[in-house]
Length: 182
Image (cartoon, rainbow, N blue to C red):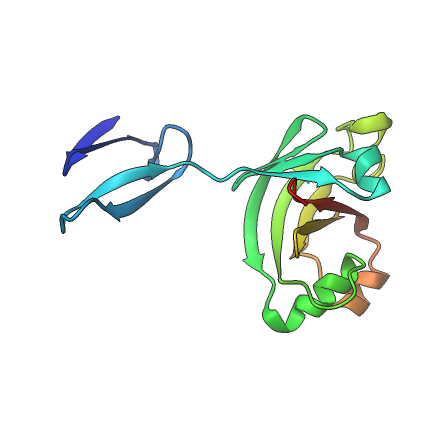
């Protein structure tokens, strides 16, 4: 553990075995200037937590409301790992929107690696991909206060071209959520 004080601010960090500094809460470190001083200090910033309200019938009956952080997905009060893979390119946003049954092009979309086991029982004794497959990928599509998630099974990164995805046997299901203030 390291305690540093610069320009009157204190930051506490821990160094993991692979040598990367990390805040005690698992957040990120950022450099911030204080007051009128030109000096800077290390300030711990907590990982953002986003709560989404289940909006579609599928989401209400299988996952309920969800929470996303930078490295976790919480469905039906159960936590699953989440790893950011990439942002969907601007020219592919319309395809991403079609995959989640959105008309038009969404504001953004991201692909994540996850693992929601076929043995993870969610609401009403449901699973994300049914009894025979684990969800291993998650497409998150954001548009005007809504979040749509599509889960995929399979080891290979899913093809996010709409025609390929439409024919894919690896799509598990699509779930829609709204932000709490909506």
